Length: 410
Image 1 (tube, rainbow, N blue to C red):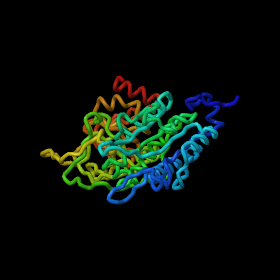
Image 2 (cartoon, rainbow, N blue to C red; image 1 turned 90 degrees about the vertical axis):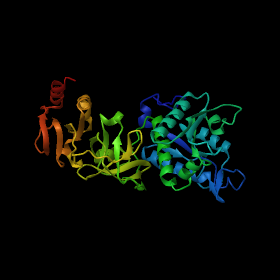
Image 3 (cartoon, rainbow, N blue to C red; image 1 turned 135 degrees about the vertical axis):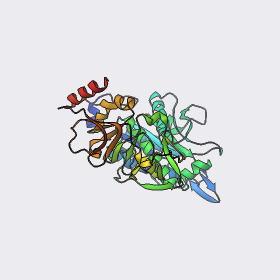
Image 4 (tube, one colour; image 1 turned 90 degrees about the horizontal axis):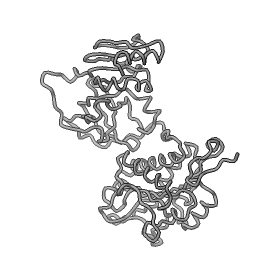
């Protein structure tokens, strides 16, 4: 059987996943000579020209590296830092090559107040509309503002009638990754934040492309995340977790991690923390995502997301008669690995509990105001210092699950 794509580009035949490599055109907007030839694709700030093509090229090349690491074949219709290639020849060749997806990179320009990233799609292309919507969702999830809801349909006879979306025979998206003409966006695109911002936008674009083919994002090729200090103005301040997330807590890590890299997260995950941190050493950019470097009550350094949806910073308060190192969670649930957390999720939420991995309990002291529930593996080798120990371990995973149900009734 010859595997085929539908018009949307999504898989029709499972055999395609095994016998055909996804093929993507990554279109770098404009060329190195666009500005000189009167294209005006860029901005002038304090007498200096900042060309859009530079940002387009760097972002696209980072996406290329990520996609190829995930087994995606990539073709560049416009070579980076070369003379501008006309649009018709780009789209004609894409159609001849039969690429599965056409993705064009740009940075926007407009009135000074216009801000945010967005994706353009052809108005009749339902699959491209879904993909553009996903781009907006990924942007907002990473803390990037979107222009409107992040999607714009290309309509004939209007300025949105973009050639690359109209003239391609496959699914096509054009992303505008921020406004060069907005002061805040400019700092991200060309200013002091450009390194981490362009990397973040590359990751967002890459994740969206991978999702089109049903490929899970496995992180960037670099093993060690890039860590850049953003702010250290946290004297006499503490980090508080929003009530919405306090029941389950936030994941804390022993090292800075790329929050998109599952292997890094698993390797450095410590436990979920529900009660915030009294010491903040600083805010850092870690591979494009902001994290706080904090200390727990024992003075041990931890790392946690700095996304303001989950936590906020306030002036430090101190309870009279209670030392900071006396704090401990009400209940602790010790599990063997992440997948086991699903079995105790309800019990943990309803009993104000913190989840701790077994390997953490083997090397750190575990304390609780009330109970320490051991959910698998028994108590041997665990450093259980304070709290009533309740061993719910069974002879198998099913046995442990039955004991948990018997203890809590859910």
